[in-house]
Image 1 (cartoon, rainbow, N blue to C red):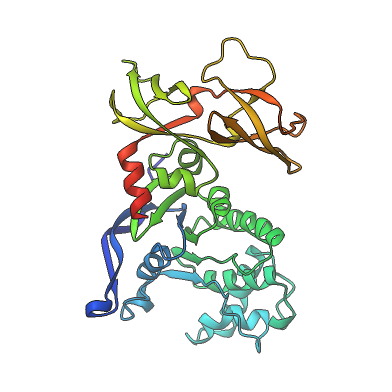
Image 2 (spheres, rainbow, N blue to C red; image 1 turned 180 degrees about the vertical axis):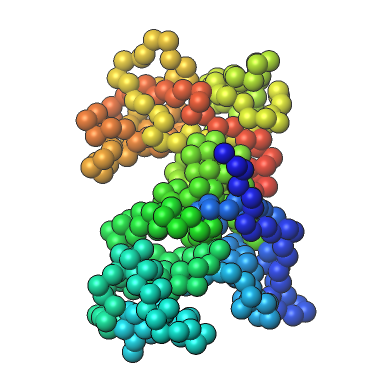
Length: 359
């Protein structure tokens, strides 16, 4: 199989807004390569620089070359014209280019089939649902056969149920068209659900890039661990690193815990452990042969349908634990917590503190 080439390359991107004392450093040396045919997500909180990066890719911050870039863009508001029909909205980019009417009609029909709106050509835009309006915006972006599609928080105006449905449709649409797509969102679930690769941004800095599963289960930055979902953070000191790189041990006030070391960790280094709540099974009887065993008392147990969300007191600290709904849990019960070493992520404590303070 031929290796995919990079469709979009960003090299040491800097961006400032404002003048003199009001000048704000928005992007701080962002560098990344986006492979052809991939769905690539910029993820981060509001103000982190993700939309500014997208606008720089689009040329919207430098207007002169914008019309020469093979790019389609879908904005947060969709920008659907209410006085036009579905077909007129989708055809608009070709209409202003004065393309032949037969070509316009054919291409409008083609893209409406791709987005699942064929048969609605003559429907007035105000008669569309939110999800249908979003599809019109996608169709209009596709009509010029772009090499890159830019999506700026396109789901933020939809209700929760429709957002879940539409993110699946976005992923399916991208797979059908194989168009390199850059998706901007602050929603972690969206990013995890649709992305081939996620670029985590904060404070104008690109912190970390990786596949969804990699960033969720084995992040290398404290901010990534906490932003991509609930996690437990425990301070400690690395006391052992096996020569084969398959096991380390870290001393914490909760006891000695095992983990699989990431590259770059050193013995005697101050560190921070991250363990996701769903990776901490609860046992009523101390299990044999398991590692990372901690004893605690349930302080809170909230039934959420798909899980009990618990807070378990271990010494003076509370551990967040999510357990299967069949495992009935009540406050005051004593349990044994355990976690396999593969579920324990360790960062150097200095990095954690720097990121926490800066971001």
